[in-house]
Length: 118
Image 1 (cartoon, rainbow, N blue to C red):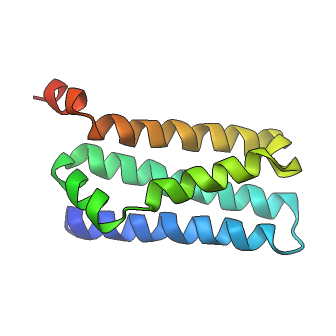
Image 2 (image 1 turned 135 degrees about the horizontal axis):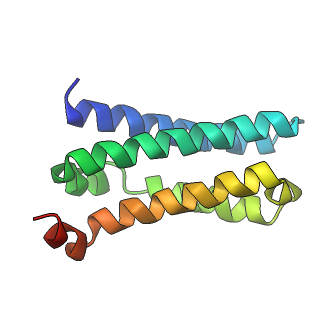
């Protein structure tokens, strides 16, 4: 699988995980189900960060092809923080880890990170 294909697949998984979290909020759910959804999002973002770290040349395409991806993740984190689900320790920790992964992706996009990798 090429890096481009891998990143496209991972971005699709991230987007799907966000949609599943949104859908779960709209339904009658168990906390364990919500935890599973956040852990899936965390896993997909971790894999995406690793793939981007391996091939930083994909960063400009990521921004162009998936302009709302990080915003959608931030939106779901912000929404969750204002709910009782956001107070559940496992969900709270996962949200923190997801935020850290987003920061890692953001750091890869920065010119300083690109210069540091040379």
